[in-house]
Image 1 (cartoon, helix red, strand yellow):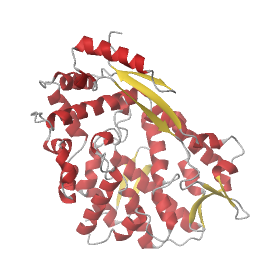
Image 2: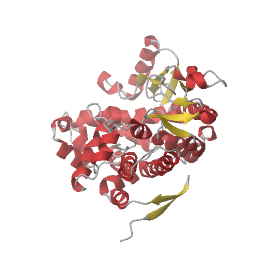
Image 3: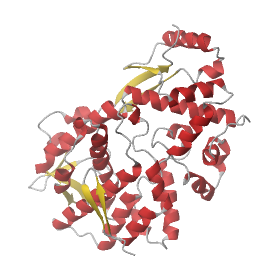
Image 4: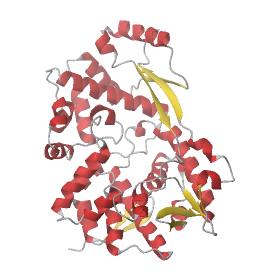
Length: 406
């Protein structure tokens, strides 16, 4: 069978699959599951085009990794065939552990397990199936290989993951402010003292990259309506989880029920992986359609609201909300819907979001000058004060049904 394929990608054009094991990994059911997981969760409630998947993103990241390896090799740095293949496998599988709707529901069932831990579970299992051929890829993914720059290509502040998702998310949302010159950035990559660096000619491309990332977070990823949708769905799953763990009979898919029950945390990795490998966005969609008919009025109301995009009102501000204001809203909602205090917490909730575009202390982006001096991008940039992007911005939100009585 010919396993060397060409995939037509809307962002980059043709993506070449050169390695048979890459093809086999893509064809594996674990990886095919990513076709059924949206890259941006519920962002399509705001940007209807944002229906792309983790599958597409992973292939795009693979394409950028192949390009980066070619560039770094062309500048005299040795990357063996085994190292190149391992780096490509590591980036291909870097998101294989994501659950339904990507980050949206991590606060519901991934409180004890991160998606990175699930990615490693998948990799370990695949490594058994492929007779140890993923050993080096796993070392690179875990930053246990002596060529540290290979891990930086997989996971850092200028990795192939970020370069792809910014460009891809911008493409599918139509938010042009997020467009970055990924080709230009990759051509400027180099290695200095085993550290991934960017040649000085690429400073302005990195400036654009950091600014684009900042804008995309506040205009797309943390758009207030996206937050409202995310928190509404999270509230639905928490209500279903509460009911199931209190003995209520709630209809849903078997793999979703498995993760809503608290005892899954005590299962072995084999049981976890067996159920997690079958879990995707379709489980959530199917369960919502069942829950809209549920006897529990809170679960039914919230599910109906989600299915018909009747999202909660969301107030966003820079300081915590006044407790008196929250209490007034709670009393209005409580009276309008006839809820008790236990039910009320699923309809009125507040929290905060925070973000910073760049951290100079964590795998910082280094600029390489012709005299071989290396400096952080925040110091190398003379166009604007990039240190502002290193500051954490925190915003507080309050969610509640729009049709309340205050």
